[in-house]
Image (cartoon, rainbow, N blue to C red; front, side, top):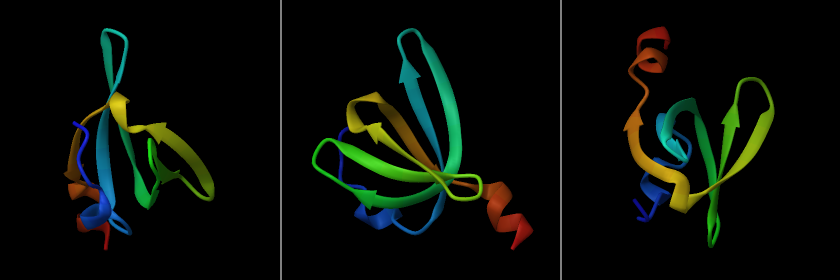
Length: 68
């Protein structure tokens, strides 16, 4: 899934990230889109860069919406 992520910036999302044969959900807020990576805030102030080639899916974080 190598698509534009601008529509998701600033939103709480769940990313499905592939690590070899394993798929891991990452919950956080998308902050920035770069050439090959996106920056995501996981938890309080922990920002990570994730390669776009590792992202399998993006979906809105329903749990974050229910807490708001």
